[in-house]
Amino acid sequence: MEDIFKLLSDSDVISEHEILSLLQDEDFYYLKIKSVVGTGSILHIKIYLSDEEYNYSFHWQQETGELIKRWDNAPHHKELSTFPHHAHTTEEVKESYTITLNDVLKEIKERLKK
Image (cartoon, rainbow, N blue to C red; front, side, top):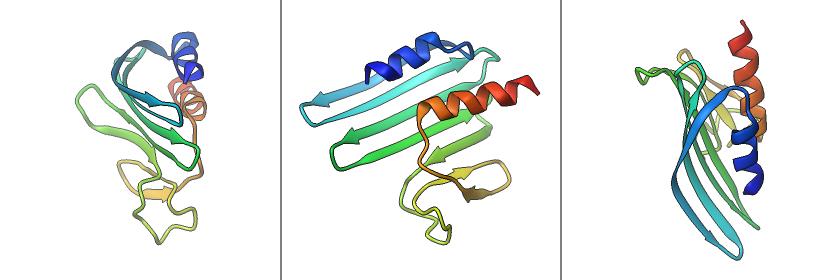
């Protein structure tokens, strides 16, 4: 979990972040964070990690609330070959892979360069 805070603190695309929820025990943690991307857009982060599970949602949106992209592994969209992993854009739901915060920050950085 410390890696997540370090990634956010060291990121050149995240200007600030706020921990909204943190639950932790010996064998799991649940973390919910709201981060501001340098452009003013928002990245909502939800991670549940235990020895048996890794559940995530990384929801990137405009300040207005309009979706830019969301990556998650909620168990729906069984039609995708990468089930349960998938990504939402404004146009579609598409195949994805197990993704981490580091992956998301890299993609945001690349998209902001355009």
